[in-house]
Image 1 (cartoon, rainbow, N blue to C red):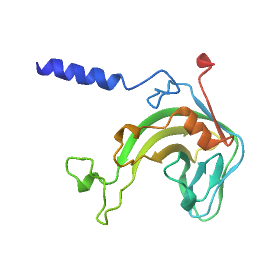
Image 2 (cartoon, helix red, strand yellow):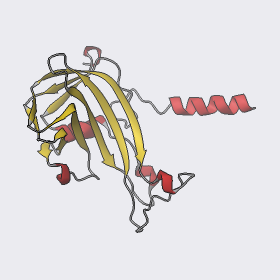
Image 3 (cartoon, rainbow, N blue to C red):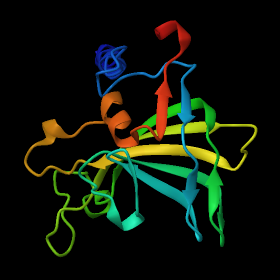
Image 4 (cartoon, helix red, strand yellow):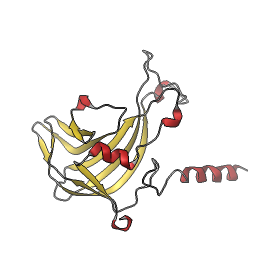
Length: 181
């Protein structure tokens, strides 16, 4: 009986991945490329820059309930760093959910409220690990949004490909494998 329940659980988890790019459960196949169309300047004292609504936005200017992406380098420097336009291999895509209030609720119940009674962030993240031999300082890009929607857990989900593309605008174009064109 335990084996049957376990098999059903595994089957349920496997069915979350989708071959449909419009699905928030899209399984990115190997061969995707990220194309940076404009030089992207990372400010001094930082290793990241944010894109939202197709524009570069300041760190404190992100509207976290809307899709946004963070491009990340490996190194923080005291001077600006510029990522040059080019095509970057996407060598891994992962998804995760950051439960910032999980430690306040040992069973991770629907209680995502901090000590002041405010709802705490719940980020659904899609992480793209990027590689460009000409720019070895490039680490990756994370696209996310805060999906803590009190009272409506059905709205909590990962970003769709179209939502990620809208956040990136023409700064970064995600190009599917040739077999998908």
